[in-house]
Each structure stands twice: as structure tokens, then as C-alpha cells.
Length: 373
Image (tube, rainbow, N blue to C red):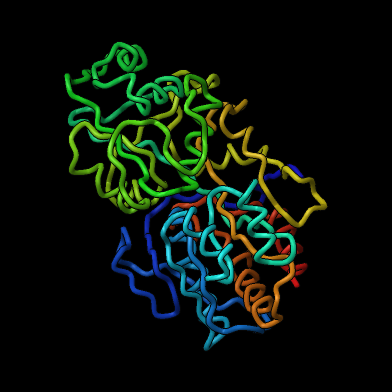
């Protein structure tokens, strides 16, 4: 299946964020204190377990605010408690049977997939609900317009480039007055799917020999917990740079670098439209018939179309294809039906910092949700 964003409007984005979500969630960790708009979804049959537990990706926390609020309004008495902690925590909790499903910015692979299958006594599926851009945010006083290539970013995040007036940065930013200022790298301290996707981008773009994975391998900088930690650390730290989910860069009012690609030597700014262009050519790694809907993101990192922003991740819900008890299966299905409904995959989701699922992809996802037993 090749994805297309037909029927999905592009809007300007606002940011909200949350780590613990439920019908009456505590919003103290939000980047924006306003509640995400949400409403009841019609024609949903509310079945199964009423109090669901999930944890994981902080990149998708804003989306879960919308989904969980709509879930509670659609099914009075039902709620989702979503604890963040990062993708690594989401995988760990899910495979230990501490949660009903988990959130991750990277699909289950290798030992994690095997552990999930053992927990489920069936195949575990990766079901993507949204796409989320990763911003390269920085704090350099007086530098409001910055463009960086993949190889230069790789050199920065591995400690090879240590000062903002380095010739490699200057060559990509002619006419910009770069200060003699040490670079302070800020990265995710915990296991993170955002880290995994960022390192996959660096590898694909060239110059990064540290490998990918959920643990940051650069060997330089200061680690912060979750997207909220990274986002809040860059603002007060002069000379800092970090990778962070877009909504957190916006909510902290951070400068964001353009990313140089082969198609755009002047750099591509992160916008809803530039992120949307990236997902236009995405395909399913396991083919159209599989309910395990892993996205082949290899085309994201080296776009062939001008104006496509190259650092975009798919956020997944990890579920059992066949749960041990029917109540949990039906409860998870009910929540996912609400989350994937067209009204929750539009303007509200864009306003929270995401690129909604293409229309035809929603149909495929809903088929996979229905297949959960």
C-alpha cells in the first residue's frame, strides 16, 4: 500500500502535551495548558474492559490526550490511563503484561518482538495511529535561520563538531554570523523511539557510524528524560541543540533548524506540509495483507521530492493479535476504533503537532483493529 494524504487538510499547528491521560487527566506536564478538543464518535459499540492501562512514547502523548478524551466521551465510564516513560518503557511494560497495550515510536523487532509474542501467546501487532515529525531544535542567540545537513548533524551529535562557528556549519549557512560558542548536545536519556528514528535518519543521511537503536549512541552531551525534558532543557541552555518531537519544540518556543537534503540544498523547514510530503510515498513493510502494519520509513530519510522534511516517525500501538481474555481484547478494540475514527484523524490532531493518517490508510488500520481477538 502506498500512502497518499488525499482528503487530509494541512493546517498550522499548536502544541499540547501530556504524560498521564484519562477521562480526568492531570495536565501539569503539558506544553500548553489548554485541553485538546475532542468529541464523542458516533456508531461505536462500547465493549470490554472499561479501565485500560498503557504506557510508552512521549512523542504521542499529545495525540493520546485527544484520543482518551474522545474515548471517555464516546463511552461514558470508560477511560485510558496512559503513562509516558518513553518507548522503551512502553515495550517493557507491555511484554511484562503490566499494560493492555504499549506506545512506541519504533516497531517491535528481534528480542522485543519475541518477548511480546510470549506475553500474548500470539503474534503482537504494531498499529500506527499518527505520524510525528522530529524537530532539530537549537538555542543560539542571534541565529534565527539555520540550515544543517545530515552529515553535519551527525558530526555535531557525535562530538566531532564542538563549536557553532565550525567551518562545516558556516559553509552551510553563508551570510549567517555564527558565534564562537561551544555546542551543548541534549539527547534522550532513556530508551526512546524518537532516538531510534533520529539515529536511523543520521545513518541514512551519511556520516553517522554509531548505529541506531533506542539508546543514544553519540557519546556526547547531556541526557534528559522524555520529550518534555529535552524540550524544556534547550531553551535555557545557551549553545544547545537537540532532537525533539515537534509539539515540544513549539510549546517551548524553540528555534528549529532547516534540514538540508539532496533535493533542497538550502534546507527544508518543518511544517505540516513538508512533513506531509514525506509520508506520501510510504509503504507497509509487511505488505498490504498483513495486520502487523509496520511502516517502511526508509524513504523518509532521503526524500526524492523537493519540500519534503526528512525526519518523520510513525507512532505505534503495540497490541496482542489474540488476547488471553476477551474483555481486554474488546476494550482495546473499542479504544482504537475511537482513536482511528476520521474525526480524530483531522484538524484536532494537526493542532496537537501531528500529521494525521491518510484516508485510505485509516481504512486499512480499522481492518487490523477489527481483526484483534
